[in-house]
Length: 420
Ligand code: ATP
Ligand code: FE
Image 1 (cartoon, rainbow, N blue to C red):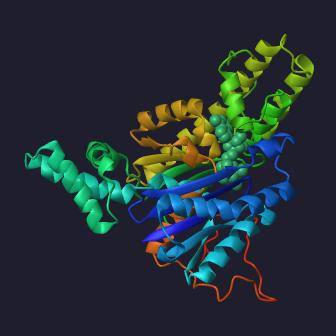
Image 2 (image 1 turned 45 degrees about the vertical axis):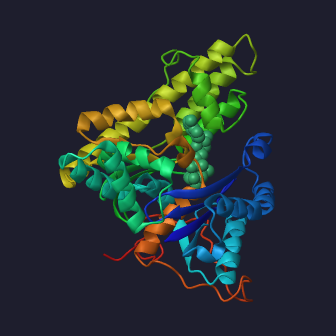
């Protein structure tokens, strides 16, 4: 099967085509970082206009890169929420248009589900490939034969693998099978709008262990980056991570939030205020002279913000290992998961607990079309699709189903939840 996915919930227009085995056949991404950097945040109206300007080209580019015609697709997946409704509607209207023109089923996708499930991208392919590789190696076959057979095994279930990829598949297969993320897994989603600790037991089967009581970590990174006068490119968070490498993480004594509350919930508002006050008092204007001090503030903020993350994760790991001993993976995803310092800190927690840490590559952590296409594929395989719309237009009186606010854990909502 081939699924095209469309993402437009915030400030990135992303489109991708993926196969059932989790290969990304083509993708395209239009970032609006330049537009919003000038304003210090995402301006919904400008974001909508940028999505409108980019969407047709992104869809064409992803299809062209994949070498796929729209009528060869099996379904169109699209983020319907949560996010900015002005932005979501651009993606949803485009998805409707494609689906109506080519009689394709539509798959509504939850943006945070897509962030979480992208960690499973390719899991089925790796598992099948690794099983084949192991059998052949045990039978004493040569590496080339193994590679060819693994490729053949893939080809049997899927479109042919490119010849250059064959050798790579065999090498990667055994290691990758180990990393293939299966349900249930523990998941930390850290992004611009969310901070969630979840037990993921299946598609749509999410138990929330913790959430933020105020701000998300990405939001705090963005805010501190702005206060420090950094250029917010490619994002405030990425700029702050880079700048913090110049600083001393112990220079300022910020305190770790909520230490007396033994929950898995998060809070970043207090830390954000403490950092703001420190900047206002000690480095109100960014200058070359106070660069070291500002870097120290950045590094200290990051250390304490992440210490909070670590403490919450350790608690969640402990809880999950008691209640669900079959959990083998800690998945960390969402835009902030592209942060290398955070990956390092969380990998120590996973190692200590005997769990495998899985962070998608950074380009799949920040918003992208691949994650939507893949979440769509997982839903497609369970039959969780909606019939093709009769026309691209939304008929009078019919309501375009956008969900700007949409809890991931709403078990009464059939679009969120798969009945077991
Ligand atoms: P949500 O997914 O909650 O709807 P979003 O889609 O706007 O929000 P993402 O694109 O998933 O968020 O992530 C963007 C966030 O990730 C921004 O807040 C950005 O600053 C942050 N971010 C990106 N790279 C890094 C990094 N290296 N370190 C810290 N934060 C980062
Ligand atoms: Fe996101």
